[in-house]
Image (cartoon, rainbow, N blue to C red; front, side):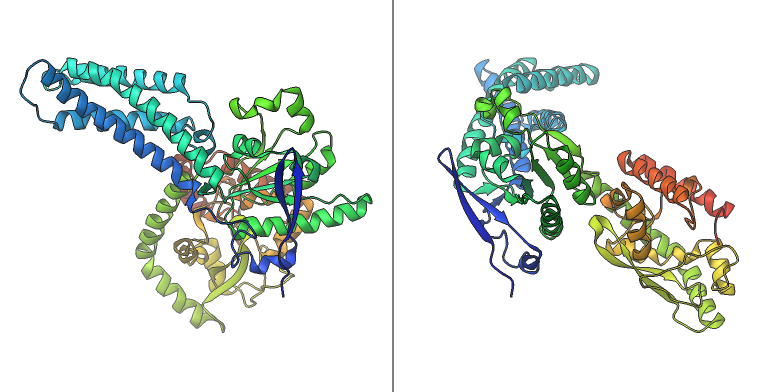
Length: 505
């Protein structure tokens, strides 16, 4: 039976902390017992940006209507139709929210900091108003929409935006303190002295939550024992992050302990999450950290999350559309291929093999069977030119890449993407991770049917370290430079690579 979490109370400057030490035996219960000793917040912090943006949109819309109706009533005109004022209000709110969202204004950590971003709000709003006035001039809608009403709206809206921002910060701060709202997607790893020194106001400044899941590293004096304990803990942390869909890891370590920083980074680099290094006690004391909650906090990003939620949603929609279209288009080829494989040799039509996917999670990948053997173990030999294991039909399928078409089902299931780093067999993954330090970063996105490496000539087997190193370099470039247009370019280049049949055997 798994042991219950070990909760160790510490008292520092009048603040009680509960630092959790979690070992691998507890991971089986991680999904069942929730946040391991911490009460789950009633409202997820992930919903806060949408709520704040909706409130700002409502304020802008209402002030637009109020400005129009109020101005016309003041000058003695009959009550106008509110449709033009609704249209202007909606357009203004769209432009304003789009610009502020791009600057992280609605992010949860920003929204609970005490100070109101007066300068940012006024600058964004007044430039948005000038942009609207410019469009009104171009479209000649001044007759429909009164300039006096626009003037009232122009100067009334920022008052409302400043007021709701002040109110929302007050309400959110109180909700965070009571545990009604919180972040359940942040994990804090560090030296126990550094963890104890962090106060609730420090946590609010760093991640917008009064507490987070804390994992304390070993204090063992024996270096070998300390490394062994840290390794077990970090493996448990990795599993915890995966099982609880955490999005950010904060490191609280002494800045002069570079060896431990590098060790921790190496152990968690496979996780597709942002990793930030917090200032240690000495740095905070040098920067007069007593007022940290009222100033911008320095934290070094040592690993970025590869794709945002919006980017993942766009990529997923593209995958579904292309996969469904391709399945319909290639349906006759799929049927004929299945019949040819069945008639050519004994064995199943579909060959399945375990692969590592996004976040290192295993999945079963489908391919048309092209060999007389079905290897799926700890030792797998890559296909070579003239390989006797490849069947007659299999040689044709591999040269035309038709054997990869069943992976469209993996795409629909969400295991793979159309575009991404090609997944390798588990045995090869384990070997490559040992010889290439950056190999694990390939798991920060879903694996793909084709990728940037494949359309640049790195297709087929990887017989040497040089080949796999170049493939990893191209894969990491793709991850760090992803865009929808880049995916479209890769699709086009893949077509010509298939026609060339380079390294296809």
